[in-house]
Length: 437
Image (cartoon, rainbow, N blue to C red; front, side, top):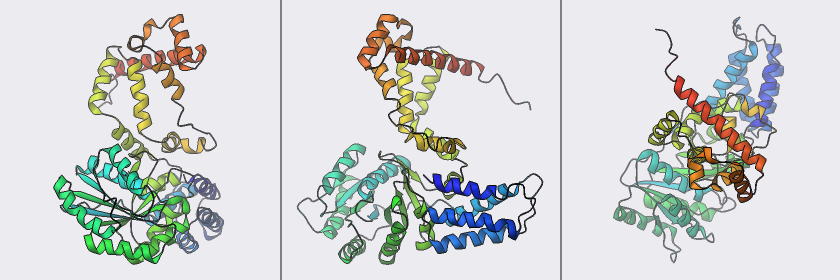
């Protein structure tokens, strides 16, 4: 995500390296490169031009302090302008009301149905509400069934009327059904088309007028770049939506939609999709996103993902086991599952400052843990709980059972022993070194 933009901007900042002051002459070349970088990222030409003009006005003639290099000063200004371009602050979702009604809109293929499930999962776990999903896409084959599968996976009820072909009526009747089930947030999944057309727009406007939603969200595939922005404008002109959801922002998107959409429709980006799993949803934070674009990572986001994945009670229990030197392969396996819950491995690595750039051309397979898991699953319960009994014959059996080699089994056991020693050492020294008062 944003890899090419990050690289091009970094090159622009290097143009100012060694300069003692930012001047009209030395900034011209740097800003020309910044504008090219934005255009290559599929940012609207007028916005790219205005952006570089704003940067120029703020940077021009600024005295560079002895402790701050001109390139770093430029990066700071560009960072601030990127944050402003993407909306400045995070925008919360409105779930006030009993029930609160959220209307999902967007084209077919944007990931609307899946994201409706992600949103229901988020609202229940983060907002403490009790959502229900409503199937109002009566045209796309298997759309209702897809929403039911999503609902089952997150244990959220789905209201549907498979025999009814009147979305407005289904939406209206869903309110009474939600109250009957004790649900206080209604998420209405509507039909999309492959392109904007009058029939679709008329229908979704009719649904809006019939149910009067507190929140209308526009879901857009971020990989479509400026097409996504143009579609957002058409939907906003008719629906006057409250916010945007960008899906597929973990893939090879150039980032133009994220950088442009706020300026075009003057509505905030509220959420982003960061993977295929139903917990792969992040609140859009312009500050953190700007940091990632400029290669400064997103440690806050990484910590938040870790907090979401880890259970506090389990962590305390694990610490006690480590202190007693009882950390075993069951615990090791559990830690792998926790890491996998956090999302795409390359995306996680990119959140660490400097690491994303270093791994630019390195393929990180999300199945990297597969071999390790196969080895551990090939152990008996006794062996997982007592790693010390893993002699030569047991290791040979595990290698055959997991479809790996003896060398791979030996390597894993060695890594496990080293991990256990390190954990024990860290726990033992915890609290030993304190900052002087």
